[in-house]
Amino acid sequence: MAKANIVKIGLKCSECGDINYSTTKNVKTNTEKLELKKFCPRLNKHTLHKEVKLKTS
Image 1 (cartoon, rainbow, N blue to C red):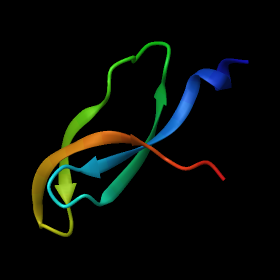
Image 2: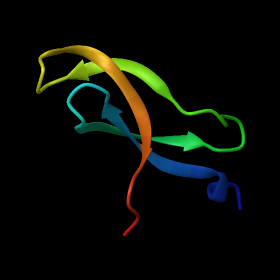
Image 3: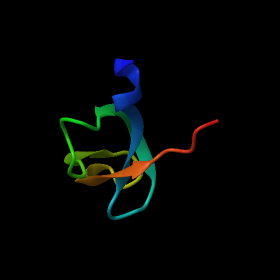
Image 4: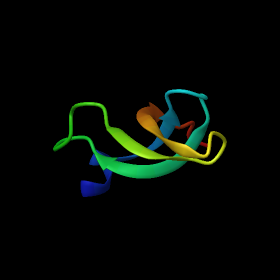
């Protein structure tokens, strides 16, 4: 049951608030929140993107 440790997360732009990217994360090995500098298409520049939970359907 290794799949229970992997969750789907979204990366939200800290400036405009859009969730532009989604990825997976291993909760056991990475306990802190993910913060990456990614490209925001709305602002047309690189900004800091922070981890948020995605709704499960």
